[in-house]
Length: 190
Ligand SMILES: C[S@@+](CC[C@H](N)C(=O)[O-])C[C@H]1O[C@@H](n2cnc3c(N)ncnc32)[C@H](O)[C@@H]1O
Image (cartoon, rainbow, N blue to C red):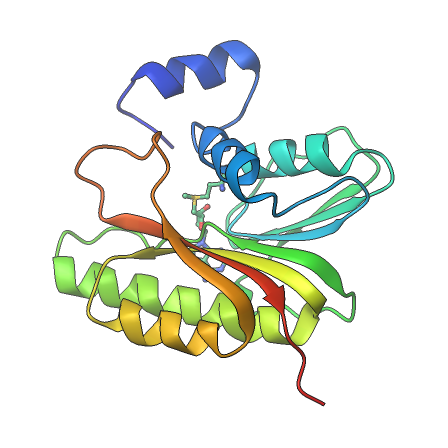
């Protein structure tokens, strides 16, 4: 998946993580405390599985991690990690989650506005799903490429979360336009 080798690529290889992206989630969680022991986590765009590994470390044996990706994710040796190979468009669940993570990214076409727009659509889909499955007070983390749509999107998130912040982890590749939106304390309107 990651062809260019760098510090985080080598670190991931040495420490047994399936992706350098694992360090982004570690950094974000250290800073924002999105996940805790015992939590139920939904990880959208989970392949090859670096975030699944990090989430499992945090939730421990009493939690549960469900990963979804349209491409195959090799299984992980834990009873409380499940993986569904399916497009988010087709995915449904009745389970409720404490945290929804989305690291989904479109296949890069090289046309910046097209890539940005497709990233926005994926982020919106993650949000539509999060609205259905998050518990009251739950947290949401979503990756999105910088674009004109991002501000409007974050305004929409602010209506439903007590706390919304943009964050770019140190381990993000230089030149990448991606940013994460960290959302905490989901409000359910009855
Ligand atoms: C950057 S990778 C995720 C890396 C992962 N967080 C990790 O640590 O291993 C983005 C993933 O989003 C997935 N993806 C993109 N569009 C998707 C969709 N419509 N439904 C499900 N997964 C999707 C891709 O297949 C890809 O595996």
